[in-house]
Every structure is written in C-alpha cells, then in structure tokens.
Amino acid sequence: VENNKIFELENQMILVFLSSRSSSEMHRAVIENYNKGNSSTLKLFDTIKSCAYEMKRAIQSDDLTYMGELMNKNWEAQKQLHHLMVNPTIKKAEQIATNNGAIGFKVNGAGGGGSVSIIAGIGKEYVLKQKLIENDFQILPVKLDFMGVQTWIA
Image (cartoon, rainbow, N blue to C red; front, side, top):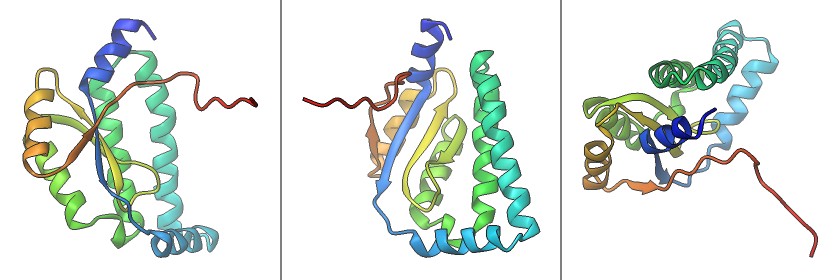
C-alpha cells in the first residue's frame, strides 16, 4: 500500500475510547452458541470472516468507501451475536458517527464496549471528531503499524 494511501486512511480513521467493560458473560454465551453449532451464530461468524477477507482486498485496492461498507457489515453481524453487544454508549457513538459523515463504524475486538473505529468521509473527519468530543467521547490517535508488537530481551 502506497504511503499516501496510508496517510489518507490514518487521516480518515477515528478511534474512540468508550470505556473498559467486562463482557465475559456475553462472550461465554456467544462461544456456547458457536460450540453448539447454532446456525444463526455460525452464519454471523461466516459473515464476519468474509468481511475480514474482503477488507484485505479493499485495503490493497485503496477503496476507502468499500472499507467503510465492510466495517458496517461486520458491525451489523456483531450486533446480532448477543443483545449485550450494544449498549447506550455505543448507540450514541454510532448515531453521532452516522449523522456526521461516517462511512464506516465498528466496535473493536469481540464487541460490547472498549473502543470503536470509524472511517470518516473525505472532509468530514474534523466535524465528526468535534461532535464526538462535544458528547464526551475520547478520541485516540491513529497510527497504522505494519510490524505489530515487537519485544526484545534486554
């Protein structure tokens, strides 16, 4: 991926800290449904998996709009995994994002809280960040890393 595309994505990406939250009950229920072979759970996991593969293609083709669509599709599938996946804070962040030019929204990790990633439409990132801040959300810096976590022995 070219540097200018990386910089563009970093500029359009907004990472929002929501709160730390215990979601072990929710995760336990989702895993139990998966292990039981619950057909709707398995289908949702297939959707999430396909979004990951498609996201790789979207990144490689520098298609920011498609990346946003995939984030939304992934989030819609995540929400259906368990009723605790969404809480009032997440709903509020999603509404602000949707109403202020976001093209993609997704709760990070297994869901239920913590943080969300948003892709703002071109030229919408400043207003979107300001609206989130006005509503007491904490914006975290975004810097893409292609090396991952590095450790060493001193």
